[in-house]
Image (cartoon, rainbow, N blue to C red):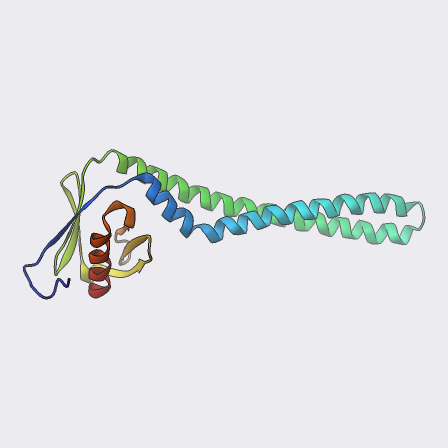
Length: 186
């Protein structure tokens, strides 16, 4: 159903938001970051095992030949330096991901305080209502959008608002209408 067919055509979609729907979406979007963090943890574990082996082997070789002990000591120093680099990168990535999660938690706490949600699609704009408080965005002010089988995300220009609508927050026909309208308008 196209909103351009009739200039007075308005589509109202009732929404029922559940914070778990948003966590599913955000965890899917952050999957790459979570995977990188897990890989860093595994690299640190393997590097620790190599360090222990080098310490033991270096101690044993120091009794046999000093040149072997020197090479092993250099290997230990390089491994420790790499371990420190991995630790720093890991802390940076975890801090960034935790900051994103805290921001989403605050937003979802505010969302839980709201009892009614509606979305109004018009030929010129869409309006998202939270307890009768309208949040309006002209279709021309939308920079882009992202859709998949789980959600529709409308991204505003510059510092504009972003809107994310989970598929589970509406029935399938409304999700189809929303997806088609967004693809048509943006």
